[in-house]
Length: 100
Image (tube, rainbow, N blue to C red; front, top):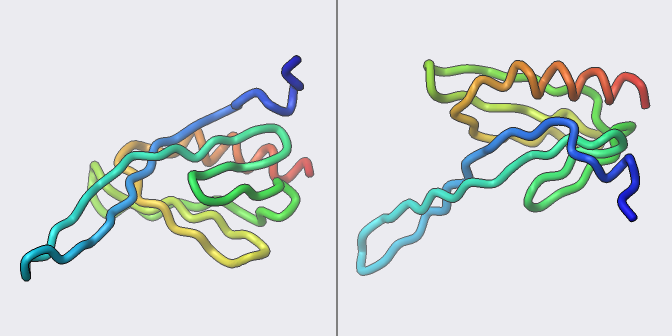
């Protein structure tokens, strides 16, 4: 049975870039992952943060299609490259982290 806390409230896709060197050539591999907001946590491909441990969510845009979403947590600041407008996600996340 699914708990109410297991329902995703908001989600945003971010891009992870992996750099490798093969045969003296630098190659970049991009993969897409998601940041999921729940009532009690924020989850990424590598981390989970309880909402009470997230201080803020901010965004810095660099062009129409590119920017960084920042999670400010008690473990430091985590940056995620996004290529969509994160306004909805940021507003929802701020609502839930302020309530915890």
